[in-house]
Image (cartoon, rainbow, N blue to C red; front, top):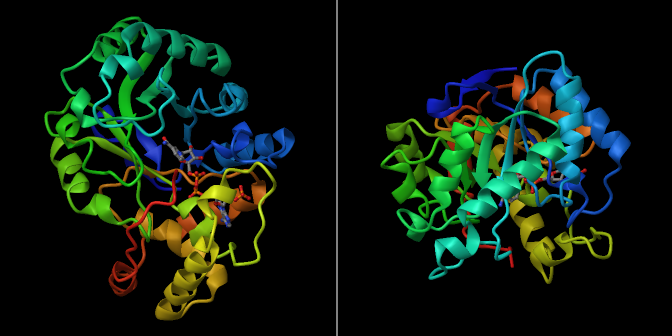
Length: 322
Ligand SMILES: NC(=O)c1ccc[n+]([C@@H]2O[C@H](COP(=O)([O-])OP(=O)(O)OC[C@H]3O[C@@H](n4cnc5c(N)ncnc54)[C@H](OP(=O)(O)O)[C@@H]3O)[C@@H](O)[C@H]2O)c1
């Protein structure tokens, strides 16, 4: 396992982290706690030391599993979690006042709930789950964050950038008002490389890459016949003819690279790891098998310049989120 600096936090984090939305069992159906725990424990054994969770994932269920695995671990494991917006608007909308989403008292209250779920004294990286650059200098969210820092309840502060809006954090990143950003970056959405990555490098802000597999599309395992359980949120994300669209794109990526589709999870992960601005990539994992495959892929390191050049042509700007 390779370790990279998480920007100015100075934390040395594994370049493969662990995403835990799915194990929270809201939105994603089908996880089993015993297998989720096996995957978390095995991840830590194999060198993963960075786990991303959120209070919203199963109303604390994901945090409870993560906390158990972290408390049992021999070495240091860093935990990032998130404060949900008080107005429940995912993603943040334009024109909505900062205090509708993140008033200081809410920021503090949610962090205390997360600490109780995790069973930890401090949170390494506390993030706002949604963000709008209009909120820089508005509302009292920053006061809440400072209060938590002063009390030792959190160490560092980050935001999770709205889906497919990487430039909607530049006003926070450029003056160095944040320690980390979490952003969608994958073979389809390469747009963070345009403005966000140069800005985070200049400001020494850590980058946590989410959704490296496009919610599963880039694993090559979703084809026109794939069915999700009733009530699973992916019925919307991959609704209509989107499974066909994704499947066609994925076939063409594999063909252009000259690899079988079965190798796409490895390629998709290594694409993200090839970007030097990235500190850690956090695929969602709910099984030991996926964990092992992703650790094995991480060991192969970045892709070649030729492969990256081919993948540059597969950029696909769209949003399947509601
Ligand atoms: N707004 C936000 O802040 C936000 C939003 C989304 C995600 N996140 C964070 O980012 C993390 C990652 O995103 P995500 O989980 O939504 O999507 P993702 O990582 O793009 O994709 C997850 C999917 O990939 C599958 N997978 C993982 N490794 C695989 C492998 N080696 N081979 C085949 N399939 C594999 C998983 O399989 P299984 O179905 O078998 O588990 C799951 O279906 C989340 O868990 C969460 O921590 C944050």
